[in-house]
Amino acid sequence: MNLAECVEIHALKYGNSKAALISDDSGERWTYADVNKQINRIANGLQSLGIAPGSRVAVMLRSRPELIFSSFAVFKTGCIYVSINSRLKEKEIKHILINSGAEILICDSSVVPLIKEVRNDCKELKHIVVYGDIQEEGLIKFSEWIEGKSDNYKVDPDINEVAAIMYTGGTTGVPKGVVLTHAGIIGNSLAGSKRLLFDENTIIVIAMPMFHIGGLAAGAFYCFLNGATIIQQEFFNAVKYAAAFKKYKATVIYGVPTFYYSFNSLPESHTKDFSSAVLGFSGAGVFATSVRKAFEERFGVKVYQYYGLTENSPGVTVEDPLSPERNYESVGTALPGVEIKIVDENDSKLLPGEHGELCVRGPYLMTEYWKNPDATSVAMRGGWLHTGDQGVIDEKGHFYIMGRKHDMILVGGANVYPAEVEGLLLEADKRIQQIAVVGVADERLGEIPRAFVVMKEGFKSTEKDIIELARANMAPYKTPRSVVFLDALPTTSIGKIDKRALQNRSV
Image (cartoon, rainbow, N blue to C red; front, top):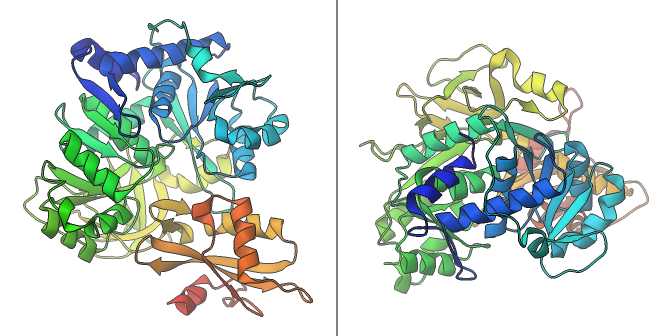
């Protein structure tokens, strides 16, 4: 079995009798038979462009049904799915296309100007398929590309083959490609979905970004493996989400902590919108106990914490809805198949209650960082993935997150790596002598970036100038929201920038 076969199996089981996917934005509805046909047409379209198993196909679409169809079509052909966030800027896109060696790119018409800027540097990129209204030489229109293509496609990939390269921001400022297999993703998705009680009666409203493994897993893998129904929204809006939940009598709420913060602020008229919910779950950030309890008390729905890593396909721990115990500070226990240990700085295993680095081992782990053996050997030493996340495990196996991965900032659930932001700004403005970016607390988003800047002698800038420069060179969620100018950055005894001191200044 590979990832695409789960759709084929349920297409045979349900045919046109059951909705697999509904776009709340357009109102369009696809049965399992419809979804399978769409996947097969795109798979045949890919084959017509001369792809072979192992070829990399990049997809840079907004969170719409075509992203789901395209990703599963790539899986079905035996090619490797390369996900690209449509909010990225030129330099970020170019790195991913060049590093992955993508031969085909499927993208939205809105990003074509960016793609045209980088295309000549991407020597292995042969074809660009564009979703949307566009007629331009050298580009293939998506609708015309799949028109007349067969509804059938033979599934070839083996479960142990590579399924995807998911890029995660690098702590050195360079995104790393996480290589995941069909077996790892399927195994993890089955373990996670069963822990969260998914079955054929599950209806989930998804407004999470689908370029990310977290959104794609819960928004497609969990559902299609169980014959469930997806209600998809391209963007999150609390009122729209609640209305869709009520309209479709959905059963599962999924989002980052920011979503639940927004739900708590809804007018009283929305209090019964989640009355059909079985449960909710949340990942990609620290979930304030006060926010979670307020949601549960108001809406009568229990919400469970989820902790995952792209490198583990992604689930690591999830709270168990069937457990009689509630522990609001914990992100749950390990999923079946996942081994966790906490180690000290010498990689020695620590006892329950002792703080250290979280390490993960099991069948869901990545095989490597794409074309990055040095990073792979460092992260996977001893056969364990060293996550860089600081935590502690109690006697009952409950895990608690104590710190951030390599200073990573979580902005409304989106990963922001300070080194990447720093590098882009230093390159964009040569007047900057030094820069350090740290996360500061934000009630709505959890954290937001703040930049501390030292200008070269004789040069001046303003907070407005730095922020505008950032907006022009990186995705909006990565942009520092505030800038502090200093004469010098604080350093440790060995000369490293002391980010802890900067964070203390931000408290």
